[in-house]
Length: 402
Image (tube, rainbow, N blue to C red; front, side):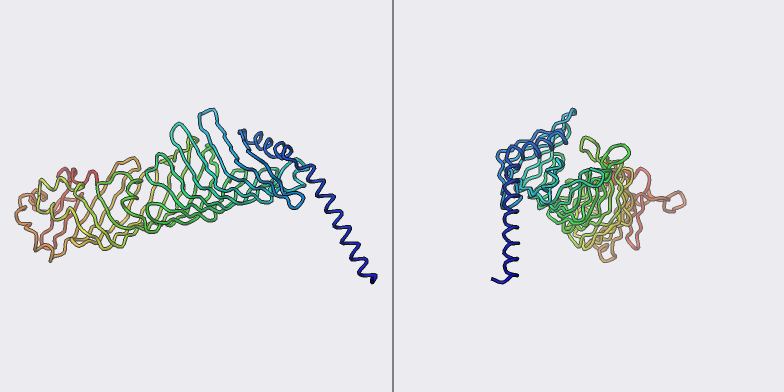
């Protein structure tokens, strides 16, 4: 045997012996009881929660993996809020050095088929089918940090009329002022799909401060209407919404409406609209016009919007329909109050099918003593040759809820 081969053989044998000795040493240290004591009990003390583990298995000496089966987590605070977690398997890959130092860090962790339940006196939230991967450790200041990627089948909130499905989030978490950074967000909502990014921090008042930059594609208007204030205009179509938003969440998990600050745009490429509820007073004044206008198909709908101090303000809300073009300006509060003015232009060929002459007495009421149209109209109705404009009390009831 050559000298070089002998040296190589000796080195391999030494490495094998050292590996076996270390593995046996690690295995003697990493018993199930020690895993519970070092990892589970320390996490319980750190977060003030109860943790149950049905079983513990390790892969030593052939690896550093620890599998926790039938894991349960529950924390309740003095205000009656609770968070519960259950999972079939939680697999962790700890750093041996960190365990020896009794400051466990996880090089990687995996959660399979998890369930998260959040409950407060005001609302409940459920996250079903959670799959989570990531790492967990300590930063230079001794505070927790984590990088993660998660998927979930669905998320439901009792007070929300719509469910979120196929949730995907990737980001990082840190135990400091800026808690959570979400580099990728994706989920299904209202029959469409949303994607974007966001962040969560802590405000000076102690509330969670959330910022998002989202694009919603192909949302069904009927589903979308469930989460908006009750506006008596019914749309049936698919909508795209792009929005940048910030808002606060209080310690009860409620969004602080007055904190919402958002801007963006809405677009729909066609559908049906029903304004019969908004124009119900017109049925008494001009039933033929009301019958003509109350329902129509639209070819295009677009608007820019801002949300500030609890009010949604729309700029140049344009609706191109088969019976005329609408232009709406105004806004509504997130608590249901509305303040809108509207303008409808009806093409000349459409006018031919309308008997507008029979409403001459009503039209005369909209002029001042000199025969001029009144100023600051609440609603304007342009019929090219015959112009109808209304203001004051006459159409207040028509548009007060529009």
